[in-house]
Image 1: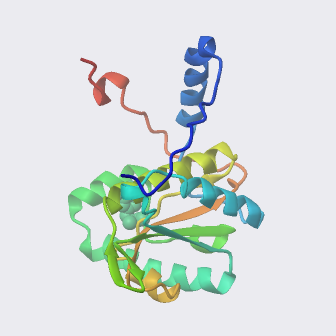
Image 2: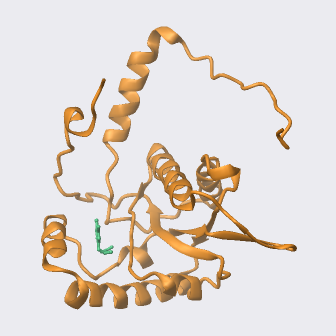
Length: 220
Ligand code: IYR
């Protein structure tokens, strides 16, 4: 028995005859997505960020618990605090904690401990995962939290690209400083930090190649 009454699914009713062209065009649009480190300081309206978060929060999740919380930061003081703390962690990662193999893998991408984008981007979206929810009756566990929040982030990155904006998936580690600076409750853990904005004019990205379909899939 379901607690949710059922309603009719509303199919999108797109023209079946054009499915191949449409999916091909969507692939080409997504293939043009790149992580961009040179994000301009040009303003992005708050309603855009609100709708991007609505899109992310439309993702499927274990038992429909939606175990996520998005903190959208435009406040310059908070961005500075986040940058300062992230750079401190990153400095110790790049200079002492990172194994040589990891540094070798990052070298072609040109990343380092400096994170100018954390203060320059008009928005930082910090995604928190909720391992459990607090209810008046006590803690209620969430399910498949990692998978659910990962999917929500995928929705978010795609929507940012579709909007003509750019993003970067920044993973300072450890990220506990985000809980402190953003004053989040203990049932939320930082998952991903995503700066969002317009690309800077002339922004460059590493010339990467993607794996071929045959390398990433098997049809049986
Ligand atoms: N967290 C560091 C290092 C880093 C790790 C991976 I995996 C990347 O793909 C890129 C960077 C940073 O954000 O710089």
